[in-house]
Image (cartoon, rainbow, N blue to C red; front, side):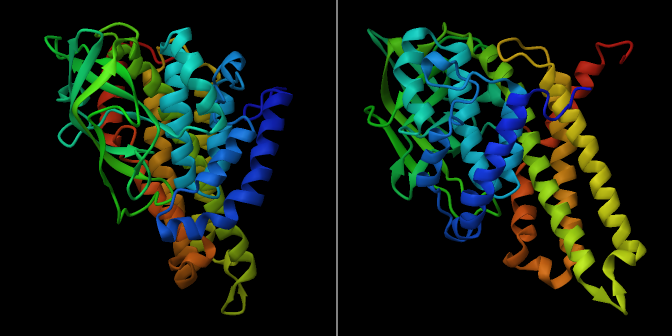
Amino acid sequence: MTDLFNPSPEHRALRELVRSFTEREVDPQAEASDHEERFNIELFVKLGELGLLGITVEERFGGAGLDPVAAVIAHEELSAADPGFALAYLAHSMLFANNLQINGNDEQRSKYLPDACTGKKVCGMCMTEPGAGTDVLGMQTTAVRKGDAYVLNGAKMWITNGAVSDNELGDTFLVYARVEGSPRNQLSMFIVEKGFAGFSLGQKIKGKLGMRASTTAELVFEDCRVPAENLVGSEGAATLHMMRNLELERVTLAGMSLGIARRSIEVMNRYASERSSFGKPLRDFGQIQRYISQSYAEYMAGRAYTYHTASVMSLDTPGHRLDSDGVKLFTSTMGKDVADRAIQVLGGYGYVAEYAVERLWRDAKLLEIGGGTIEAHQKNMCRELGRIERIL
């Protein structure tokens, strides 16, 4: 019988590899990185040594050549220890590397993907703007063709990996913009490198509720000259690129929520056995039993939905909008609720850093916002369901 969560020996080996690395290397630094709001770039490079930074990239470009299920496994395991670090991983491996692997040409892949896969370059994707989030087609960043280059003007906001420190940009980005004269629904995508004239760090954003182990930044483009060969695909074709890559992004974000929920369940389940009250273990009380059992059932339901959706996805073919939205809609709130219950079970101990659940709870909230708000998922799903007469 096929194991939905480890459908092949390769998937099981990958899970064991990432879990071992996470327990040994990621978990011990998680609390400090969160407290310092610091991106652990040294640890990030170790992901490259393990072959994880290009997990879905073809081997000829330095990647591992694996599938969406493998990507979910990596994100679930990393997020069980440090969701903030996992978010930096997602922005690099899914939003940049996978995006360029699927939509770029061989010259672009050969130039940029090998360094992305080793971690020599820290990469990301620029879509959201100060005035355009869910309304992504309302973006105002423009691109004008001038000779052998495009000139970009605008600003991008909430960009993960946009900075690697307080005053240093990340290395390479896929930037969405509208070529002058293009209709609202036709976006284009460009590869922009640190060092391009007119490309600068607006600010590294501090004081976030959670996901503090990943950096978030505003990036500014002021007459930024981008070589014409850095246009990915053709003018106006990136709207499809974006929507196709969003499907994988949302499934891996769901994987992050699964990691948060699993760790939270493990913590509260263990604590409920170790702590006694009124002469008996906490787990003997009905209220505590409800928190633990309901959390486990919701986690397993979300896990089955997420891994099933990943198992039928194709990296280069769109068409999974309904369920990629669905898994993120369900698991993002589930992960937050499970972490909240864990805090409740632990009482005062859940409110401090020692048991990690307060950090997991803070990190979990972003997953109801980033990569698509839960309201956007509801809208998208209802639209998709309106085209279906029978669900099965």
